[in-house]
Length: 291
Image (cartoon, rainbow, N blue to C red):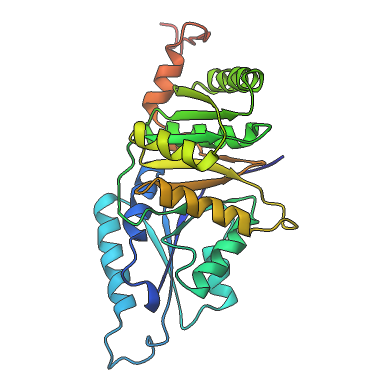
């Protein structure tokens, strides 16, 4: 099983995306996970000093907003979407932010490339910005991936939010087995979560209803990263979730990779709650020197 850490939040900026809403989402996640922002910007106008360059103005505004929140920014400027610029955006360990994967050829390409990476998370933003309130973790696979559930749990712990875990099954027996597995994993990780279990028929409609009923701002779902598989079904499913659950943002995590949130970035409160559990043994070491 592949394992790495989420290390930065990646944002793409070009002349065609000056009015996108990706930056507020990126900044909120960078603050919540204590991560830097990697801003990759492309514009053919940068060499003409006599022309005002909106991309550069936007980068300066982003830098100011990040400084106010204590978030560092790594800016990479290119004249065009070169392979080097694309590699900077798709660097492993990134949480790549997209406004609309179908908005341009570049966004389409970046999205499809990020699908196959086992070390990249994808955040597809809602068309209307909504801050992180309640997170819905979707478990609809025939076999729930432990790696996926671990990553989702660590993210929620770092964000200090109690998620709703939606378990979908084709039968009552399958629902019971999945619920037992999820409960055991949550106990092992020390994750406080609310569980909803539904024997479903229509995946997207059920997710939309639960997201609306639970007033969720974000949906977390797993994706397969096998490059031999067609990526279009994944994009269609994400688009359906976003359209039906608006204004919910969709975070996709690689199904078979446990992406760690380093301990120093995790919530002290969630660690304290775990330490206060009655089933956790505590070892106290006296560090005082004898008199």
